[in-house]
Image 1: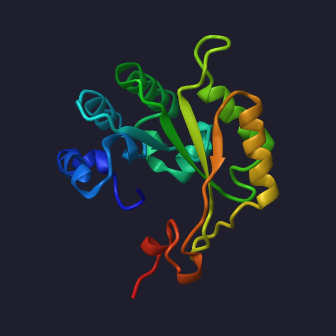
Image 2: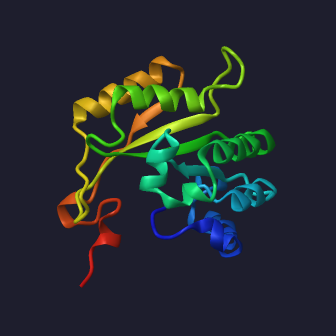
Length: 188
């Protein structure tokens, strides 16, 4: 995750996934991440490997997601979520949603409620097919700051209260500038 769009290189990604059990990593413990490249999601759903899908989302609002992730102009959020639902219908594998927490940008309670509405089951009382991984932002040279622990906890609690499974990802590697996003930001 985080180093290019796997769906644009799906043949090689799938070939690597086929070899992972030789290293002791089972297919059911493997997720392929995407920014929402719908043709790749559709193609992955047709593959026999029981891998999971992880969607980098970061905002439940079209305008904000477009600002954070310009791919949203090509594949709007509603279409991407529908492609994820189709993936689940075919594979019966819960879809992970990756959500980087940015202070004052995408971490408000109202935004958590919007995310819960977006990811809710299609029928009342239905279990969500999505699980949200809230990712504390790691400082880089970008203009963003990470959300506070309290705001991340409030965001998580709002999702849980609305039936959306959510966890806060552990951050490792900050002390050596090797945490999520930092390796790509470091040059020279």
